[in-house]
Image (cartoon, rainbow, N blue to C red; front, side):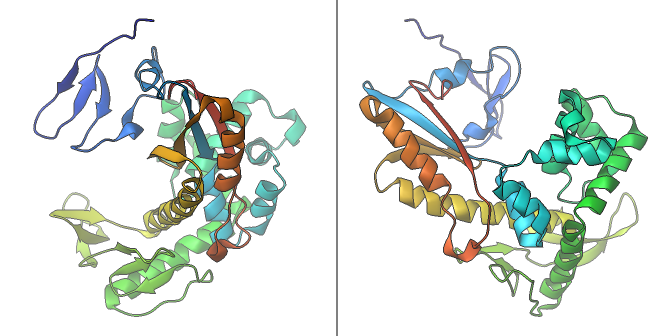
Length: 314
């Protein structure tokens, strides 16, 4: 079989590599997160990444891991229970938005419910949510988008309460003080937030400054040579993504006891296994990706998996 070959162009000093007009790499290191996920020929590059002869690639992807960690950390017990019982949380969210029974939710309404669950957990406002829906091809009036954001916050009120706590934690970090969150898997320490892995999400030189464009006072920190804005919703996102990485890292160690994993992309692992044991290997990696670390008791994790000769197939 002939495999298409594409010229990879280096677009300048920032090493933004493109192939056939698609951005495939924007750093000096390998970053498969930037492979396109939509559009014509979406899988062409992914299908060029092949397993060795006699082997398959298995991709195991943590399902909705950020939304699950957020609900668990915030103590949003009803949402945690829905995840645990494998209920359709997107339909349930849509039923609140459109004031209909979950059984009456249509596909487009469910899509809105999905975007709400996955997008509104980090203090996104109505304008931004409206723009995100438009980018996903979902048409909604701005007023309705703002209403949807409000419905999410009222339905899962523990999550906005967590944003308030994270705002207080940021102030404590700025003042060099200690602060205790209700979930003790995360420690507020000098300079940032310590994850269960021992790594610290740092906010160096955290301070208030006036925004030169808006004139508003905002909290910023120094990241390399950059001035970076931070607020409670963004800190919540940093925390959730950090915890997600801790979870996947522990799961990867379990997988590595039996199979080599070739790469991680977001919250998924891609594993190399012999073709003859593909089903067995997929079952094992799925089991590993549902493992709940000891520090995360009650976290409702789940996983989806598939395999194929190429990365695109799995």
